[in-house]
Image (cartoon, rainbow, N blue to C red; front, side, top):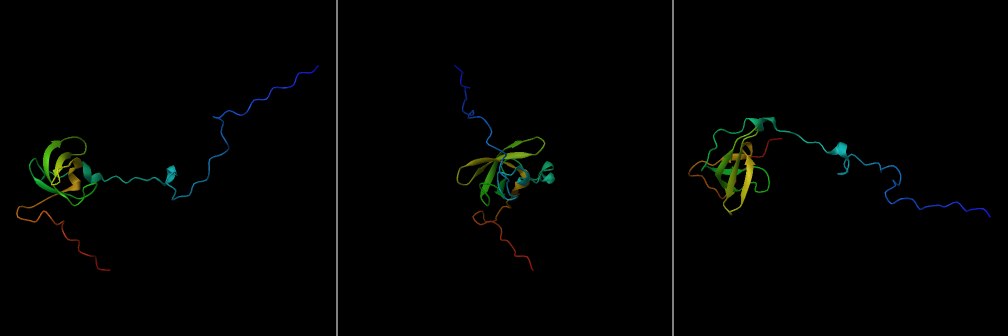
Length: 116
């Protein structure tokens, strides 16, 4: 009597073929993920120090006024700020703008439209 050949199902970890072709705008495409680095951030802003009132220019709390609580030195100078709503955030000093005494903290500076 002849023995029948044993066949096993393919492993679950086996590849199911080549990966799909991703478009340039597809977020899963690693070639489409480009990052720009602001080299001016290394210099920072020396005019910002502990206790100063600043406006956050970018990020989660953009446009909010805050007070500088602490400074962190490093390759890119950063500070810990506390917003008027009581939230804290570490931010690069180039992403902050000093608020002059006597100016309104409720409104961010007006954007002047560019002439086209």
